[in-house]
Length: 119
Image (cartoon, rainbow, N blue to C red; front, side):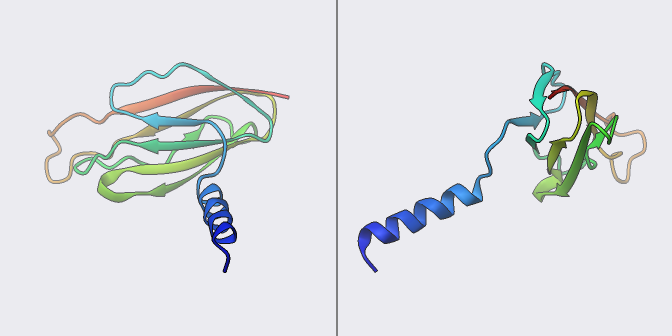
């Protein structure tokens, strides 16, 4: 294989592994600014780890406008993709699970982000 061909294949593989699109990060106590997405845009969401109180799957306040698919990650983290389907407003949200073994343990954290979808 020629060196240039190998380099191009490597670059194409790297591009395929990192899908384009806006990104946001879930952090305890964060209050992110609203996002504006166009119909068809895919938002990539990742969270900070939360090993003792894992993040729950992301939800959308209006699945007709924005739909999310979540995947648990290591150390209580969550990753998700949310696709903008129709114009309108939706809020995505996740909450940490209750502390295992100690119902009086640390409080749960809730994270939300407002999304406006335009044509």
